[in-house]
Figure 1 (cartoon, helix red, strand yellow):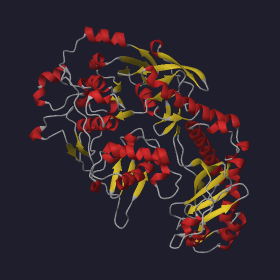
Figure 2 (figure 1 turned 90 degrees about the vertical axis):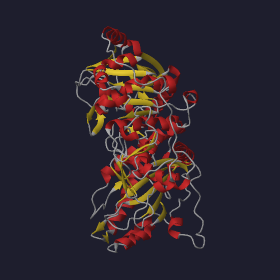
Figure 3 (figure 1 turned 120 degrees about the vertical axis):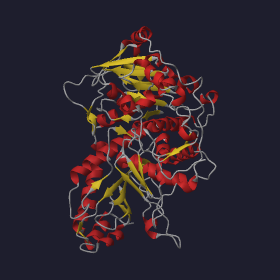
Length: 609
């Protein structure tokens, strides 16, 4: 059994050796109160950092069982430990040589609490058996050692092993792994070293938020915004709450106020947005889009102090926008667009360069496919999971949203392929139970379509449904409905396996993530900038490996896209995100089925039947 002192001696002996010699330290090492597992050693100081794991047995970590007594509490605790470890690693680690030398890190965290692979509560595995003939000894050495049969904490981190040029800095490496790392583990993964009240508050806040979201259907709601919520953010690139004294906490209109009794916090009040069609109106800069953005992010739990901890939304809520230039593969957009020039079909619409209107139509139909793809009609839609559409006129195609009376008079319907959203939004709800929350500041024509209308003034909401209906009756627009009697069918598609190719050159799989808006998949750059509810690079990394997994495991030319996505998500639920990768990674975060489908849909090579 190798131990801390063995590792220290190895590193000191490697001092000034060629950098590739670091590979000799791969394996498992027993420290006094934890196990260090070195799974992968970088081959160059400028390459991706080395991947390590730390396992602390329950008897040492000492976390009270009530902090992880159910799945949502366990996830919240793992999130708390990841953040604590990350902060301490940032404080302790420093530059030690060239490239990424000296770095100790875990993963970049945002305001959302996500299911991640950065930390686990696990049953530590038994010692690895002796390698079988023909096996890979390096991989065998990387298996975990049993320190305790009880539950323990596993944290997955990355380390930039120190180098001078491309020579090993053994002394600095020994300080990092044998001195700095134990200090970080001691201060972040042992309950006695933490502020118990802060830890408990983090866990209870996340549990309450998750509980609130699950109560929405019982009250016939699609979203809830708590009184006192702080909705404005610091900037477009800083998602932390705006801390100015001028910030106005949100307060519900009395007519929309609802009450919940949370498991930990107790009574909470706020605005409930019911199922159906809801308009958010108001003057510019009064908080319409800010409210919608908070609702958009309400599909996630948030950290205490975010301001949106108790803003919750139906998990199937999907932000819809125009997306000029995106590719579309075999989508039936005929409910919105038909009779294209030259007789082009829109029941299997395919293009490499969609317009604003066709892209928005495709985005809606793909969202419906993700939620209702197993339903052929409105009669069977009640057994599916209808999405909630979130639309902001600022990012929508104008000609897709509305065609007013004057334009109808000038351009006859038989010469206009587009059926505007205004004529389909109610049908979506009556036929398929698909609710819509729509920010609209420029057209009162939607008043007749809405069940509830909320006017924002100075970031405060007022219900103005009755007043808006009176105005609609007083000032009739005279426009003609163009949507027909029914919304139309939602068709399923089957991907052709050969159209998803993650290889490039000699590499069977090439994946790379650029920020939160692009995945490199083989030879393709998949633009996800319009999939606005992705919040972490770790989600994109997980989506990339999930696309490869889906191709290998389930794409057979017979399964529909939705069946494939459902199978992948079922595997993740039963076996964790680890099922997607060949070895443990700490930088994956859970995505929703819609986001995985959205990435596949944006592959320019995608072909379907």
